[in-house]
Length: 104
Image (cartoon, rainbow, N blue to C red; front, top):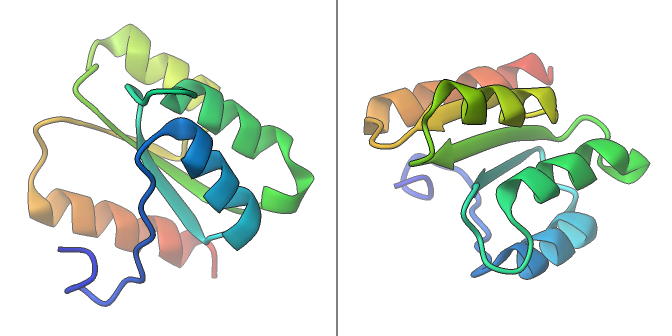
């Protein structure tokens, strides 16, 4: 869906591979779930915010963990947005567009 919307998409099957991709590619936006094997989404978010080389990378968390405390934790760790599953395609695309426009 994101590729069809014109975005370049790189995927990783776990948090360790995701972190390696972030370090290597330095994307404009990182989208990840909280429940990842290896490194969870909270740890990825913390690492992105602590890494000077990733300054400016927007972080979007998508998760079925939707309790207010979990959303607050993600945002406190530096996520720019947190979408609770299930979410709509339009909501996802609008959130991504908004986050990327903030970078300009």
